[in-house]
Length: 200
Length: 200
Image (cartoon, rainbow over the protein chains, first blue to last red):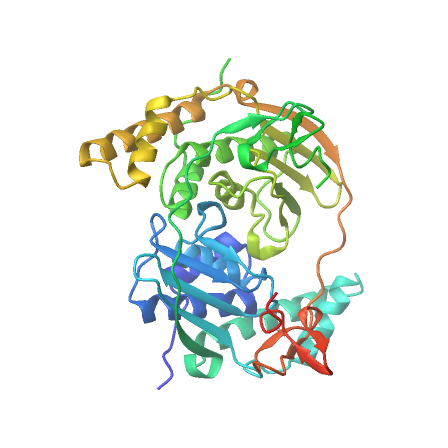
């Protein structure tokens, strides 16, 4: 039986954070929920969970909101593979689960794509923009209602994570004078220089 | 006159997203507010704003929540300089502002650091953990109340941003069978292979 997921308050939180409803956010929402359910975990207050996201597209925002693995907390790892794939680990157990969108899980939707391209080239009429918004939201809702097993493959994974990062002192760059983490400062010609002044 | 910033609903949103109160989050909160005020902008629903963060520490989460420039939306750029520095741009105007923590803006707080190290080595007593939590929150509140000009340097910046990313088709990796963005697939020995299978 397909599990029917209505726009819940969790989904509303994702929408509020991300700013708009779209298919990618819905994929991330289903993925994050699936991982949390599978691991029987709740949102990480601190760093109890670790997420690996293989995309920097919309779905990553739902993962941040739902799992509490956020870019600024050190428990959100990005691998630039361009895949709609998300892994969640319990830091203590090292037990994790990876979900990845199945090939062909989403219908091609040629009209959706055509409209997006017209919008991005600034050629779309107001009506076309509205049509695009409708299709965009409809596709998101379809994803919310699809049975999980039609959307994703799922695999158990074990991985040991290092201890949480230590607080690190900062040093002042001898070129720009700004403070930077000591480990990001390099010595060049006897001067302590930050990465931006080194042009990295 | 120092502007007194009480824990507002915006700050609460940052706390809820990040999961705990800490000095880094407070720095990001003040920085993001300062940038939005200076640019006279509101939170980006879509990609009206672009943020550049020079740290992946806690403050980056406040920037995501307040500015609407989020990791998953394509308007959040990370430069790994280890600096408490944040830049916000209006995409149309290209007009931006960068704020960077001043050297010495925060008192050294030896006790705070000592406790953090004991906690991270699992040597802290319950009382020490509680003391740490208190100092952590006190320091955050101090940052919320400090005059902006004592915290940050501020600089106007202009930069032109490329158009928003186009939707990209995906291809199926011929090794693992998973779909990935076409631009992340490489051909090796006549096969189309994704980055994870290539071991990148």
